[in-house]
Structures are given as C-alpha cells and as structure tokens.
Image (cartoon, rainbow, N blue to C red; front, side, top):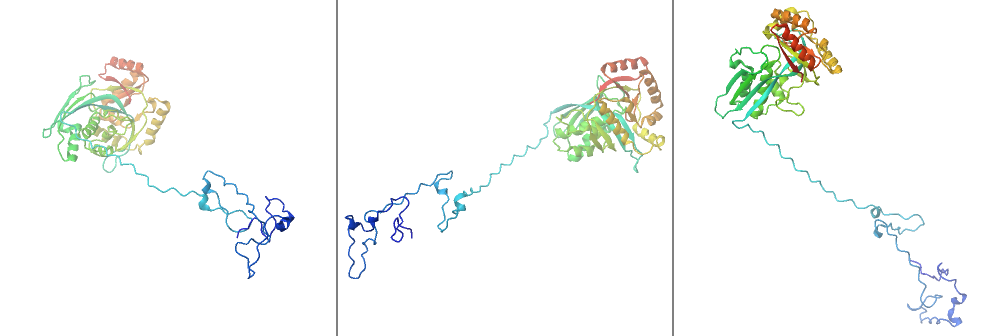
Length: 432
C-alpha cells in the first residue's frame, strides 16, 4: 500500500512541507478546527471519522513527477522501472528498447531476358564478296613422321595482305550449285588452272558442309585468285577456310569455331589457321591473327602481331608438298626431335625487338625442297648474293621471301630483283 503524505505512525512530514506546529497535535484546544466526534456505543468509530491525530482540512498533495523525457523512440519507449523493491538500477524491458523487426518480404525476381532470335538463312540473291588472305611461315620446325606417316610441326605463321577474292551468291532452293575459278587481273604470277573443279578445296568445303547439314546449300561461287599456286603461301587453304566460315554464316548452320576446325582438319593441315572467329571486333573477312601452329596443324595458339614488310620472291615453278615431306624423311632422318623451342625463341626475340629479325628465321623444309627442285637452290643462292641478305623459303616452297626493313627498302629490293632477270616475280606484302 502506498504511503499517505502524513501518517500517524510516521509523523515526519514530506520534505516539501513546512515544519509542523506543535499545536497541530490537538488543534481544537487552540480554537482551531473541530473536535473529533464521539465514539459509538460499541466503541467503534464511524467510517467517516478521521483518524486520531489527523489534521483537519485538505491534506497536502505530493509534488507531481516531471513528465518522462521524449526520446527518438517517443514516450512509449522510455524504460519503465520494475515494481520490485530495492534501490538498484531499474530493469529495462528489451522489447521496449528494441524496435520490432521489419516484416520479411521476398524480392521480386527480375524477368528472364528473352532469348536472342535464332539466325535465319539468308534469302536467295544474297551476295558476299570476301578476301582470302595468304600466309607465310616465318619459322618452321618439322619432326619425324608418326606411325601413320604424318609429320608433326611447330611453326610461326603470319597472315599477309596478298589475297584471293571469293564471291558467293545464295541460289533459290532446288537449284544446282555452280563454281568458277579464274585469275584476278592484278595477279602477280599467273599459271594454268588445270585441276578438276571437284578437286578444288573450296568446292570440297562446300560439299562437306552439305553432308553435315543433310541437305543441299545452293550457291554460285566465283573465285578470283592472286596467290601463286603451289608456292607454300596457303592460297588454297585460305580459300577453303573462308568458304567454311561464310557458308556457315549464310545458311545459319550454327557451327562453332571448334566444329569448323574439326571439319577443316579433314580438308588440309593448315586450313584451321584461316578460321579465326574469336578475333576482337571480328568481321568475317578480317585477317586471321598470327599463330604458333603445332601438332599436325590443329594446334592453333594465337599470338600478338609484329608489324613488318616482306618481299615475296615467286619463281616460275612450284614444289609439290608431298614429295618435299618424303625427301625430308631421307635428308633429315637424323635431325632429331621436333625443334619447337627454336620456333618459340624466334617469336620471343622478334617480339622483344618489335620487328621481324631475319637472322632468327629458319625452315626445316628448305633443303628437302631444294632436293626435289634443284632450280630452287640455284635461284636462292643468286638472289641472296644480289640482295646481300638471307633469302628464306616459306612452307614447302617454292616461294621465297626476304625481310624488308621498311617500305623504301622494300621498293629498292624489288628493283634489284628485276635487274637480275632471273624470271622471279617480286611482290611487297605487309604482315598482319
């Protein structure tokens, strides 16, 4: 029970009242107040009779407690002292201090993006005209043949801007495909086109894609050649790789680069080099990037380009690839394992110099090619003496090349070659 302001058993007044007057013990004796009523017959006082010794009149009121402070959570959040006794710190209700957790709501999932539209075959009449860039083997190491007679290689291969032109037109469904091969008007060295059309690598590539598609892919093909035939510049392989890429695009066949490389390996060992669908800012007739080619030609490691100019030296004859590799087996029988490290060293040294260094270039097929075609050995020796610099063979020959320090020097080399009157055509090309 709460204490009253003045308790008879505890006459000490509250600290906020005046000191008691001694006369207040019996105020009616001093002419103030009213005497207490008499007790009833039973000696019990009435319920309205004031307690003995209680003062008359209204009791002094306890001072009002100050309002609770208003904090950031409002008055309802102020801790409330516990009702227990003791003078220790008041306990605070955890629920009164901690705000209630916000209700959990699931975040709405963003809508799935719509799948890209499936590529559709190009309509009849669609035409494409593309360049088929050739290549040069700046360094070529050849290993001994495997059990099947194939030779593993390691080669630094770079594209050059001498290119054939492939023109394709989609024909209406049901029409028969047509093929034509001719020389471009500005071809540097024209030779007879004496192979059957069905043996051409472009035609083989088209028919291989038809076989995998399980249907005809009617088109008209016109190939205008600039790259010398049988010269080791990869002209036929480049035409073939371009045909695979473009027909795959025109007819929306959906073959990946890996798939196209697999098809290319069935057509030629270096065709895959010309299929580079992962180039930055790719366009379908862009140059392939330079590569370290390994294995049987299927290992393609793209490497940075090193700018430079070359002067191609095209003799009036070619050297067949098959006989050159066969001659390698007899001439280089004790040459040892594949010299891949020398190819990689040539790449590293030229990259460090930011230019193509002629003295680090080599070709393991040079001597076998000269044994197959002795005229090549004589021409190379005379050209080297006239130009006063090393003359290299690309691939299995017969095309040779020299490294030109700059555009001005390249023109001077061409002029010198013409003066030799050896029947060699000199062509300036840029390395891609």
